[in-house]
View 1 (cartoon, rainbow, N blue to C red):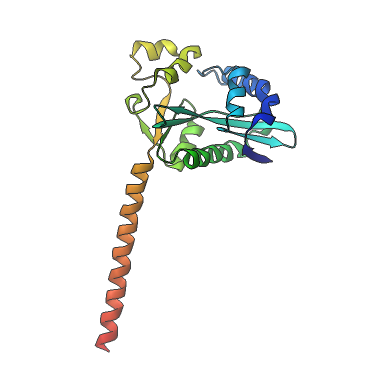
View 2: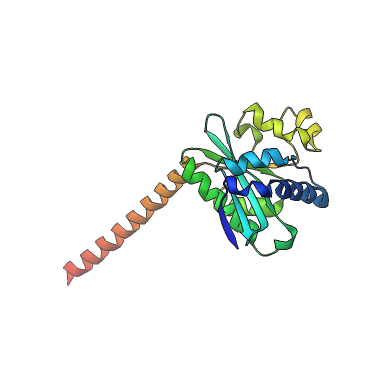
Length: 204
């Protein structure tokens, strides 16, 4: 199994990716924005997607969307073909697109909206936190993608404040503060240990 950054050579998979996303939504009975083959093709070409292949056979996919003048990026369209499910592939694809997002857009907040508990768990393990929709991008083009979802009436009635999806956000600045705080505590502990050893040595 190979998980790689997609490019123009993968355009032949646009149709099967689109069909797999649509069929998956029907089986689960959940709302999901439709993605046409043309829409998928653009994501395959611009280097903002990862694709999983078993030889020449399509296995999985996920892509990056850029919003709000690169202030936000979304990891969307995570899908695994039925033949390759229950093997941990979704988690590997999710991690790959997350790392690609951080590499290409290091200052951007990474977000997603989902109804799936497995995806929420994967997001949480990567450092995402549940947030209200008001903390996500206000770019109208992002929310236009929800027009084909069967739950659009809920989103519209609540003036885009809530829906059946859960919003999740990874903020690199918050992560840095957290890391700095942890490193600061570790440094103080190390300093305390060294001082203690130094005092014991001098007493002898």
